Every structure is written in structure tokens, then in C-alpha cells.
Image (cartoon, rainbow, N blue to C red; front, top):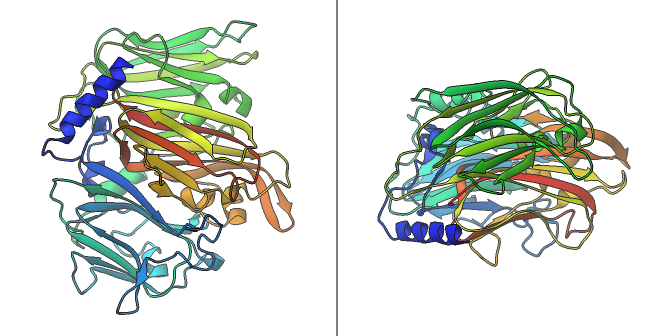
Length: 502
């Protein structure tokens, strides 16, 4: 408790300083070794077409699909004072196409839009910098049209469409006491495109020598009252884990990957901060899948990888623990690390990496499923969620809205429109029948699909990362409905990646 209070006091002191926020826009991706840094003057927001009455009219009729119609007859879907940056913009449309005309971006109260394209053209990938893999259409992200081009604005940004758009969401950040330049057509996104194209390799620019520890370990099966651990790595001084890789030397099933736990202890802690199944940790809660995320991934024919930087001041211990009564077989493991704690940066604090796993098998209560509920200061980086129907005919669990509450706010700062939308897909049947894996989001695996009166139901696992991180000063709570108004029981499991101030 003392450590959390001390970290919060340090954080609030830095809040009073006139300091720089984390790099914003494309620059955020230039040095991802800075992920552990927690900043006091950056806040994340989410705007969507969710039904403000609590119903399920999240975009079907377009009731909440614009903020207002301006004096030129354009539908305003986003308007915000700067400085800020949009990191993700998503839509879906009927017939897996978009029929609402042009999209226009007006910067700094200019009368002429700097960006203006027909909607289908904007997501087609033919115009720089709006190209794959920064921009995906519905046959790539399965029902969704998603733009991950960071779009910065200095003073003001207004986005309009010609007609009502239907379902949409925007993830963006606002900054205090910083100066940003607004987006221009001359900006070069080639480094970011290259970064997204080479998922599977370390996205961080490592300037120090990485020490490697490689070993093959054989996990011991759990017995009654005993679950032995197998150590992968330990160090009794400061440093930073740069990557963790494991390669099962057998063909693991879903049960195995959900019962072998990765455990990480920092600075002689008695309890692990990371105590999670390796399947969800590397991106899939339904067993092996082809996951090619920017930070984590797995392959049915190769290595599972994690590139989150994990700094520590006094020491670290990493282990695997088999909690099943079956043999865990052998794993080839590699841990890459450097022997320095990150340098201090003015106006920021350095967080430790954590991962939190939660389950409800099933959730039947008329309340949200909670992915993460944390008291303290830090920043969330991403999440993995797995849903399995309790019965084939208990469908429409995907209608549940994501909600993120920050620092005790009564109203959720993030309010989504349904599971497939939050993971950047669209339209449940098309989404479930066409898995995908992309740098910042994906649905890498579905199984046990069945047609229930013309609508497919089945199990799915999905992931999403939040560029810029979702900062919180006092607390954060991430939850989701299971079905419209929590009316559909289902088996839920989730994992949240985050940094916290110790």
C-alpha cells in the first residue's frame, strides 16, 4: 500500500510541472522503448455512435452517428480543440461497403479540408499515407474499415461526412502544455509503414547490447496441493527485459496454453505482478493461432514473442508454472535483457510492466464483465478477450458495449458499440467467419461456429492495443456488457497489459 501511495504522490507532483508529454502522432512509434514512461499531461478519449439511452441503437438508424449537422449540411462526427492526435478511426457499413459519400478533415478552423476523399476511396489503400497496413478495409479487418494513421492537430480538428455514417468510433488523445504541428500531406509515414509490416521482430530501437539467456525447460505436472515452478530467468540488479520468447517443442492444445502460467516477480516481491496463462499473454485464448501483433504474437509453427519493455530497479525473476495435472512437455525459451534501468525524463515517471488475467465462467449476472479494475497510477497498453457461448443458441453476446472508467469518473470515458466494433471488425457473422491478425488489433481465431437461424454463433478471441497508452492517475476500470444490457450468459476470459507506478 505504501508503494502505491508513494508512486501516486510522485505522479501528482509531476502533474503540477509545465512539462512535455510523451511523443505524439507518428513520433509515438519512433521509440517504443519509452512505453514504460508515465506522463501526467496526456489523456485518452473514445467517441462512438453508442445508444445514449442504453439501448442497442448504436448505429443501425444513425441516431447518434453525428455530433451535429453544420451550416454547410455536413455531418460532424468529430470536433475537438487541440493539441491532440487521433490514433484510430473506424467505421462499418451495410453490404461491407460505405455509402455515405466524402469524409473531410478540417484543421485549425480552416475553411478548406486538408483531407477529402470518398469514403470507399479513403479506405482503399491507394492514397499515401492512407495505405495498408495503416488503413484496412472490410475484407482485411473483417467487416470494419479502420485507419491507424496518427493524425495530429495543433489547435482544432473537425471531421465531417456527407451523409449519416451509421456505426463509428474514434480513439484519440489530448495534451496539455505541449506544442504539436497539425497533419500535412508532406508528412512521411514510411518508417511507420515499415514498422507495421515487420511485426514479429522487435519494434523498439535497441541501442545497447542485449544479453541473451536461452534454455530448454521441461515443465512438471501439478500434483494435489503442489504446482512447481520452472525458472526461466533471474537477475539481482537493475535492468530491462527487452523480449521474452518461447517455443513449445510439442503441439500444445488450448487447455495446455490456458493452464501454463507465465509469472514475473520484481525486486524480491513475494507475489508476482504477472501471473497469466501463456496463451492469452501471447495473443490467443483459444489455443495456438497466427497472431502478428506489434508487441506480442504466436505461430503454430514457430516462436511466441513479447516485446514489451520491462524495467526493474533491483532484480527480476521469470518462471513458468504448469497448473494442470498433465505434463507440460518441453519449451525452448529465450529472454533478452539489458543491464540498465531507463534514464529519467523530465516530467515523467517510469512504470513497471504488469499483466492481469480475469475470468467469469460463465457470467450470468445482470452486470458488466470486468476485465481490469486497478487503483493507482499508470497506463493501459492493450487487452485480449476471449468469449465462449454457454450454449449454441445463446448468441448476440457480441452486442455488449465496452466501457472504460478513468480516475473515478461516473460516466465511462470510453463507451463502445459491440465486441466486433471495438476490435475493429464488423457484422457478427462476417466477423466470426473471417479471423484476422493486424499490428494493433485482431481476431486471430474462432471455433465451434454454428448457424443459428441465419446468424453464426461460436467462440472467439480478440486483441487490441492502445497507441499512446490509456493513462490514469488514480484508478481505471475496464468492463464490457455481455449482450445488450447484460442479457446473455457466456464464458469470458481476458488479459490486460499495463504499466504501473510501484
